[in-house]
Image (cartoon, rainbow, N blue to C red; front, side):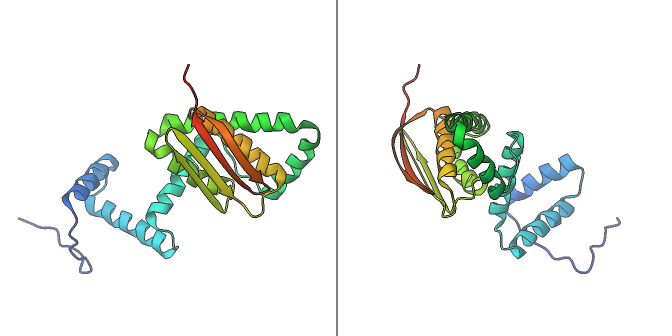
Length: 197
């Protein structure tokens, strides 16, 4: 019987059986070797570590990008968008806010269709922090819901647009606004579960 000789620089690594089973499933789907896949996964984890990004954060960031791509979102520099918004707001403030509320409503429906109930608010908190470049954001939900954010460089116009967007988003998730306190770049909003029907 001929056995394949391992390269001299290989070492034995002990992993929990459940992880090995999952690796086997993926390697079979891909048509690659189990050890090749394990080495690739570990290489990627080490690359993330070298970048100072825990692998879980890197996976969350990829997930957000995929959600945004699926929703048709695109990245635009804040300064460019601010100029457009400021120019439009002078004569079309209500129309602009309605447009952003509609966009938030659509995105809320999209996220709710993709994620389970317990995942929605934690995902949205991370997603809003990244896509709106917020310094702090918190969203909690239950029968009542709570949204709070801080952004030290946000204009008054953008603050209003974000609040319209979140209003649409929360409406899509079955909540109506009951209390709002905001100034430029900061807001706290409370919501109640909207009556069904």
